[in-house]
Amino acid sequence: MALVQIKETPHWKKVLSYIGPGFLVSVAYLDPGNLETDLQAGADYKYELLWIVLAGLSFALIIQSRSANLGVATGKHLSQHCRTEYHVPINYCLWILAEIAVIAADIPEVLGTTFALNILFNVPIWSGVLLAGLNTLLLLGLQRYGIRKLEIAIGALVLVVGGCFCSVMIHANPDVKEIAMGMFIPKLRSSSATRDAIALLGALVMPHNLFLHSALVTSRKIHRSVAGIRSASRYFLLESGLALFIAFLINVAVISVSGTVCSNPNISSQDKHHCTNITLNSASFLLKNALGKWSSKLYAISLLASGQSSTVTGTYAGQYIMQGFLDLKMKLWLRNLVTRCIAIAPSLIACIIGGSSAAAKLIVIASMILSFELPFALVPLLKFTSSEAKMGDHKNSIMVSLILWFLGACSIGINLYFLGSTFLGWITNDHMPKAAAIITCMVISPFIILYILILLYLIFKPEIPNKDSPDTGTSVDKSYESDFEREMEDI
Image 1 (cartoon, rainbow, N blue to C red):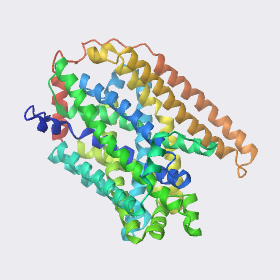
Image 2: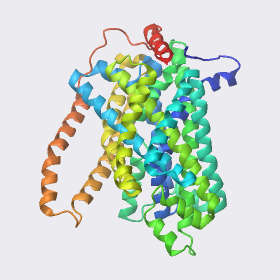
Image 3: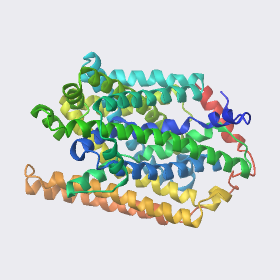
Image 4: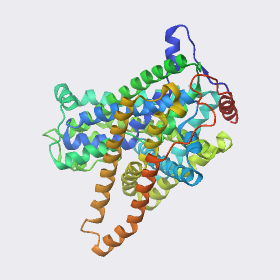
């Protein structure tokens, strides 16, 4: 199956040819884990944390554009660059961490689909996990008809999520002036608000998305000239900006709905109790009691669309990660099946053993894992896109590099703070004996030291000179192109 050909004329067809990768990537900012975080932020602080979402998605656009530039300029995605840059032990370590990140990102997505099926059709939780995996494989089967069909299907699911929540928001009738103030006037009224803001930021940028975006843009057949690569980079930036703007509007709608419902002075005591600890399951009861049964159904439909689209992109990211780090020539359908089975296993075990309460706790653990994993994708990305040996004339300028490293350091710091504060909260609570807390700290300490050492290695490791000049506009990477075509035909 051939790559997507960019149509130069008319101009609107050229623009449409680039639309797709950004929408697949934007799904990660609308996954069930993000929806749950948004609902809780709105319930606790009404519209006050909307500026955090605006700042977070603006940062995400900058980072995702670097990921897209890496794929466009070099013709290879992030995991492929990691395989050629790092020694075998580090490469395998990064691969394992990336696979864990995919599984962690997939947990809220599978559980979101499961809860949606339970709300809509009373499907048992454990059965919903299996159905979520099956539906994802069916959606991935669209690859047989070309990447464009899959992109259209995911784009439609994103619009379903947005349409459902916007309909509920209109019925909830939030104060537009207060929403605008929350969006553009930074405010953190307490230490708990700061913690929630950090959790909100930590849930936005996902490590597997950086691998995915750099791979998706290589599905376009562009001119390998300097001007052609720059033009493609600009179009992908605009396309990503549009997709993330839609994701931002949907996040605003989710926060506005819970903020309006939970700040209502006439709210019942039962609904007030739901507002103190919103889960993907309890949110449906909250909306049903406050806005009517149809609101609960719309929420379930949006949750189903969010979960299914997110699991598809997560599985897709897992394919590229496995192929890039290990250079495995596995048939596409088999790679789909392996990735999907690995991803749903934790969710299935948790649902069978502990039901919906265990599933809710699993989502919190998944968010901690993603916070832990982010630096191992972000640091290589920033290094590679600032490398003249890899990017040629398309490398980051000194000013852009400084800004990116500053933002990257802030993001890593925020995620590590979220990880540390959550972990310390667990071991210092009254339910854990002091002896157990001390032993836990002693066991965890070596892993923390190893974590820091690997991170320092990634930051300060000298770059390996490329034996061949980078494919940044002087030649066409025919070998990569044929590999991609053969991979897509394997199905």
